[in-house]
Structure formats: structure tokens, C-alpha cells
Amino acid sequence: MRVAISTDGDFVSAHFGRCPSFTIVDVENGNVANRKIVDNPGHHPGFIPQFLHEKGVKCIICGGMGQRAAGFFEEIGIEAIVGVSGKINDVIKELIAGTLRGGASLCKPGSGKGYGIEKTECDHPDEKNC
Image 1 (spheres, one colour):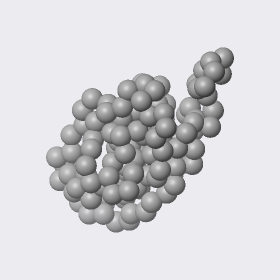
Image 2 (cartoon, rainbow, N blue to C red):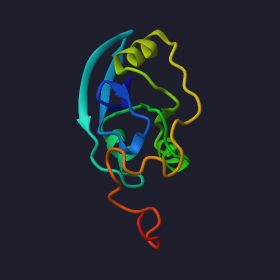
Image 3 (cartoon, rainbow, N blue to C red):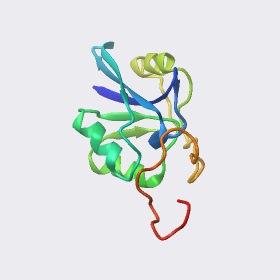
């Protein structure tokens, strides 16, 4: 199974859409078969779920994401596990062991402004300073 983890350095990023990169891991027979880092291609509605879908991702792990993003993932059949924090290597170990647990989203709407990748397209074009 191919999994993407929102990544900020060695840690899971709290803000899915604004993370600097994604760690993409192929897990096969309880082992990591392949691992690579891909840059975040840009943050605008619906783009990242499609980008990851085209890369064969079946699950996204992150600290948090909004309901709209979660809906985009659900529409294309990608499982979203939110509420995850910690070091990427530890998260991968938990994933393989079957002990990874998600929870409530770690970011709230608007809380990611100024963090990581800014949106390239505004959700509310009629508002100033989106």
C-alpha cells in the first residue's frame, strides 16, 4: 500500500495542505519497500488529493486537514488519518505494526496562515486578504 505523510523536516506536519513536502512510503509484507520525499506541488482546493491519487497513494497521514479536503480524499477513495504527530520514522513504524491511531484534526480553519506553503487559489475570492 502506498501512503503519503504530510512532512515538515523529520516530523508530521500539523497542516496538511501547507506542509513543505510529503513522505511517500510503499509498505509491502510488513516492510518499507520504497520511500521518497516529494515537494508539495501547491495548496489550492482539490489539487493535492488529485496529485497524490495520480501517484497511487491509498492513504494520507497528517496532523490536520479541513472537512473540505477530507471530502476530496474520500471522493477519490483515499483514506485520511488525521490527528497524527511525531517523527516520520516513528509514524511509519506504528503504521507497519498496526498501532497508528488518528484523532481530532490538529489544525483549525485559518490556523495555517503563515505556515509553510501558502494557497495559490483563494477559497473565498470575494474576501480581502485571503
